[in-house]
Image (cartoon, rainbow, N blue to C red):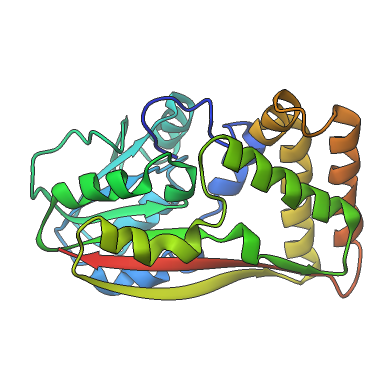
Length: 267
């Protein structure tokens, strides 16, 4: 995740439970829409790279590329360097003031970043500035308001209410996916292609992984800190929400769908 340098308002924080989830990201599950725009020898910037798993997989799809990756969190960058430092240049950075000249990169990529920014259009303008003519800016964000699950559980309903409230209080948009095309066009891109995909957790292992990850985040990560600080929940209430995720995962017919929107802006 990258922002203006102040990462205290980042809804998820950088607890191990968050980085664990982010480290599972690959091109196949998070950036298939971008593959057709990758080519050997490109200059690529990965904005909000987190622990670097997706960055490293992008390199594998663009042999010989020059990969730079930034994140606002020094902890995330330290893990990225430890795990993937051989394939990319990982540095802390600010998406509103990228350390690159105009027209420098062929591809600028940001996964799950714009939903955590105060001014996503300004960030897109800055990403556009450093992208060379003929290049692309590619962004992908979830849409929390469009997420759906079965069976119903009061704990999951409360989880969503609190998440929407904390992100709104921080000046961010949890439903960023639906706004990507508008933001991209507002940033000055005359041509853009928008698509949508989804994560679906329905098999026992997938349900368990999703539920345990969120159960840990709810009581230990930035989600907990923001909810308590803003008076939206107590620790006891959060523990019950975490229990709700675990209850949900035990149902043989449980399904959780996480929709994403992808937008490619052409420079």
